Image (cartoon, rainbow, N blue to C red; front, side, top):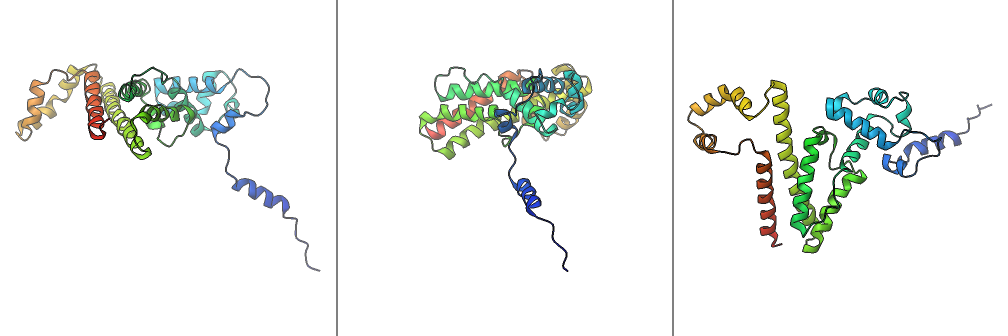
Length: 253
């Protein structure tokens, strides 16, 4: 007699469930499952994790360290996030949520300028954010940034692709400029240099040799004549004006 085969209905159903796209963190938080009242919230979790990252770096953020900071059981945060990857998503969204995107602006240029200034301030206040956030994170507060930019640009009659190109041009400028500032601060912290004078003194042996080769006369002229070497705000806003001027001239807006 042939052996009877076990019913396959349950296993097939389990396989189907595994194949279904799982709800994202944001979908789950929009419709949390019923649970007893608790003092732990996504906001508290994100706030505590951001505080750890700001003072000690992103690598210091672990689920166990977070639980200690919150004074809860190690598994408590797992009611909201599945692990560190989702915790970082929550942190990024929390930081982006602090951007003052509702600041009134007179026209697209003022709106983009304000947005760029606030994004730079965010990047400098949270040096880990550039590593943690990507254009594909797709968190609610992160998406609010291009939403704000697109709304400001909508009145200029640009097509959808051009609108995205303009936004990305400004965003990439902010990212590159602030990343350079963060890298300089990291270098100073690692070498124990407190300001521009100490930084230049520390780099002097290498710079003296390079300038002595005679291969960089234009750069040497800059070193001798520049008066704003230690004015990152001026450098940022001047560069930003160049970017916005170029956009305005190129598209006639």
